[in-house]
Length: 246
Ligand code: NDP
Image (tube, rainbow, N blue to C red; front, side, top):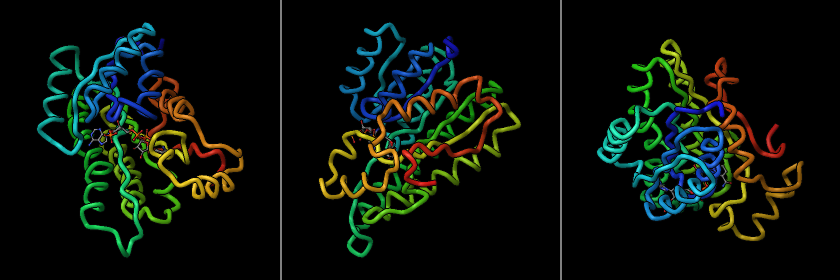
């Protein structure tokens, strides 16, 4: 129970990878705040964690809305204490070939996946630097490193997230705060279940371990990065992809 007494905020924590991370951090003793644009789903997931004996609560949060972000951080400070662990997980896809991609699809993906992370990180680091401790983990993606057909917006956002992670790590290190990223490959969630069968099979052929990852595979690495065992690790990107990218 290495995270006893810590407050962890997981954006997009209502389902998928975010929920697996929330469950894992709660299992390690943290009070987890599931902050999601889908409040009802976040509340249901928070109840599930509580029924398993964990500490959890839910907040409505749209990571593209600065006012809402400020109000969530303020209310967590008032109700508990400032956030110790921030997991920037909220993300969306709006796939389409570059030549046909609508400007609105570019903007939506960059705004949620990259600017949202910047805005949440800015709020969190203000508090963490004062506390002289804290850890931030950003959920990037293999496609931020490799690129991917039909994902100009998403791969640009995820590549940006890697640069943002490294800059954050450099700027906050002297105050005892770490920032790292994980770059999952193809993980079995609603996001990838939307993919066409042909695309899923083509992806599988490229994965040496021969299967998609599970949300728990990602949660295990996040739990390590926010633990005391990782206190000398910052500015790193951990690849979780079954060997798809070596
Ligand atoms: P899901 O779509 O299953 O879950 C994401 C959650 O975030 C949803 O509840 C979603 O709500 C919510 N969300 C969307 N927009 C916002 C917003 N503006 N503010 C707050 N919450 C929001 O995604 P995954 O669990 O698959 O992915 C989680 C993260 O992992 C993402 O950043 C994704 O890019 C990344 N990732 C996923 C991979 C995969 O293979 N699944 C691989 C690599 C990275 P709603 O349902 O309304 O959109």
